Length: 493
Image 1: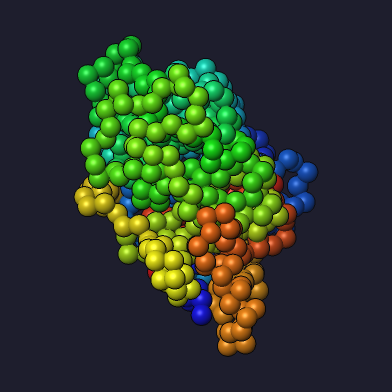
Image 2 (image 1 turned 90 degrees about the horizontal axis):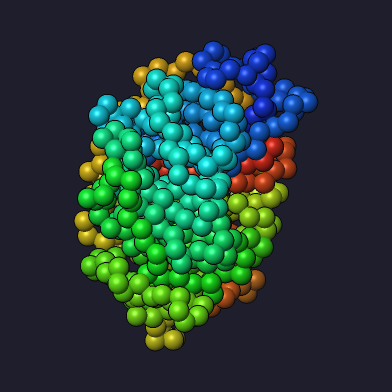
């Protein structure tokens, strides 16, 4: 029998297609604060080009279930939304920013002095703009990268530490503390790390390590020193030339998404149609971080170089069909006491889900482990102290006291018609059913792909998903992508 986890997966609540010019706004303005009524059917009739959304993120500094606000970024548009609750469909728009630059990435931060929500956006030109969502003002512009910025991430240790990945082959760490405003760049990871542009980066939950991936097909792990340090605020930032782990063997094409699953790694690249779960041999985040001098150099070519005493181990793969273009991101929901859910959207409006806890629960994996005298796959557990540090971050009840704009469509869709259930019923308990279960849950072969545990189809428009984000408590999930699409999912908690 397959483990039943239907309640772990969200269902579609509403969808919208956003055009470059909102229906009820005659001209672009820097910030839209009036009522915008936009329906799905009306937006299809517009002749204006639909916005292409590349990134979306929920505000992380509230308690689970409290004011789940998210931002989405696409070229000249940055929109901050709040999902409507109850039977109401769509979202309310909190802020809508218009930018002359083309942005593709966003990350949330928080003003250390006032607690105001800050939204960091970047793209081309390679500047990072810091927006105060409460006031609607541009607070600061960070300048330093030489080419387009493709990803942003804020450290789990402090909302004042921002990292950016660029096509100039480097990662820069910025201080958002007002005391460092004149010289905000604290650290540069570059040198011999990547030979082509970077597409993605991700902080370890401890904040001490950073993963990067790029167009050179390489995944790097960088050890991050304590920040801010003695040179923060000066014109001489710390420079790290070598990562402590580097491999071109995991993937064969542009690496466009990486994420930590505790001490394990999830990553994907273009043209492989899969997400890979793997680990760095010898890596243990509970141990003292390695010294800078122990980082392996590039004097001797090896596809995998590591300071942790081994290479890497491929664990298993998740099948994600029709995700061949690069810049299509997956997302992992992983919170204490919740079932970890992996999700990615494809080019054909499909959204694939995997319940990672079900891989541990499926009885077939236990039998395989007994036969092979090996340990069955187990859900990684958070290292002692990490959860406490994350929960200790400053919280607030709401990022905006009032909602000045409302929008967005609803679509009366029957969610049940869009689902493929994970559970096997009595009629499936046969050879065919057992084979299907193995295709979903068996983790005995590191090169076998696991088919999705559930698939949703976003109706009416064929679009490519670019990014997916979860609210803090997992009650909401949003998918954004081409054709100006925003699909909002919800689930009971």
